[in-house]
Length: 261
Ligand code: UTP
Image (cartoon, rainbow, N blue to C red; front, side):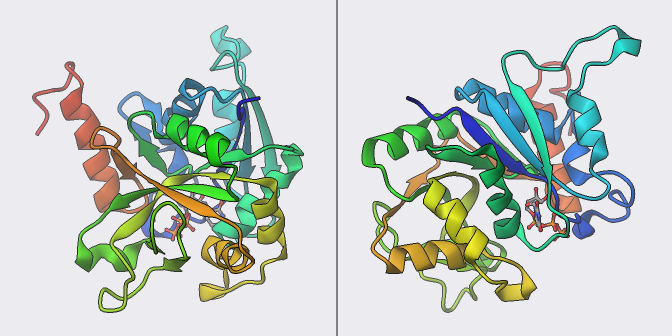
């Protein structure tokens, strides 16, 4: 059976995008004609996902409204062929804690985890699922190479990509183990979700994915990193600069707006 479940964490505060995020989720910012989160769900449906669990929080209701049927507009649910479910992270205790809420799906197989504030062009999720099914590791992580001076913005993997030895959150460039950065898409086995639920808050008082994966690796579990291909670009929208760049990238690619500068 292929993996058909996904978790999209969208409960973060989005403080780096204030004031745009005072009353609306950053994941609802539009990129061209649709919000970022719709790009993410469409990407997942294209990879064979048929059940999506959003982990939401305060000020995130607009996401639920977006995917609902709208009788006033005479329209049914926004997307066919995908069941959309919601659970809440009562307080933003970090990405790891948000993902642990994915246990609500009760999945017995792996789940795709896609950050709700990043669009990834291409088919990387399909390749992550194939790698997970072939090797049955604890986790598969999409990674991309970043400039050495930017490693302190990302989770960075250590060791050979076929079996990483650690994930280090936002290392200093001098001490970074590589320049392979985690790229907003993962496949996690149920064991990873259980480990996240047990993991105490770490760096910044937040539950860190790096700590949970580190504990599993130390117990002999395998974690595989899969590099993005050239056509599989990741676009974060978590800062004003990256949001503007993402919007312009998609505008330039679209024949309707290709003279946008
Ligand atoms: P970020 O690391 O960008 O954090 O989250 P953030 O809190 O949203 O943003 P800033 O730092 O305040 O600007 C990456 C993804 O993880 C989700 C976010 O919603 C985003 O989609 N997230 C983060 C949660 O669901 N819960 C959390 O506790 C933290």
